Image (cartoon, rainbow, N blue to C red; front, side):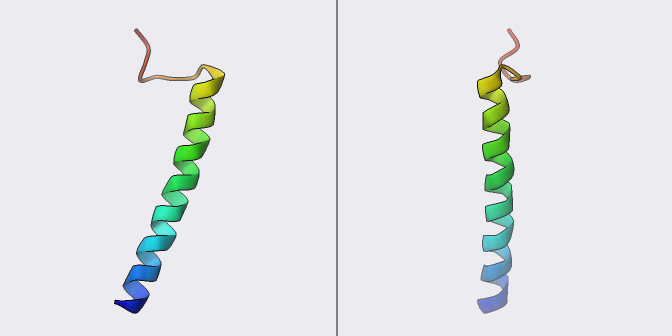
Length: 36
């Protein structure tokens, strides 16, 4: 479970960074999800 867990953690970390960046865009008003 060593290498696989590390790889998953790295992927999760990268996804979190992207998600945080997306949240920053939401704050700026670029939210395609809430386009009602």
